[in-house]
Image (tube, rainbow, N blue to C red):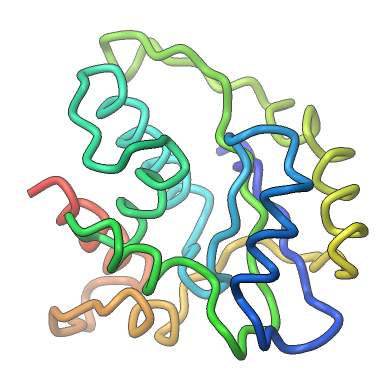
Length: 181
């Protein structure tokens, strides 16, 4: 599976004013296809791609709950119908040390899932912009990809019992699906 356009950023210090960080990011981002996601809530490439696909499908069908694709993506990752709760659970918070800088891909969807193609360059096409954002926000690039953690499940308020036969990634995916139920 191709890398989702997500870059880990380690802030130079713990976030003590989330509003200031968001204002800076919103001023610097090239467009509204860029967003900040809490670091622990991204479980895997598959998790991010499924969240993006769900957001894109909702957008095409005119069924988005949030007013913008970036907020809809956060809402789906958080597994909720409430946008405010999504920002609280999947957005950055005071005391966070890191986050994901996300660039929502520009890919047109075909009606059949199997007919969709993801160009492997989707990550590389925006890497320079991401590095620019990281540098301007006085951060450093985290050289790791999304990984499911118990802390991430707790942050998005995963309320189901974790069953030993299910992986952490499966728990994240089940929670993501609940955003559309």
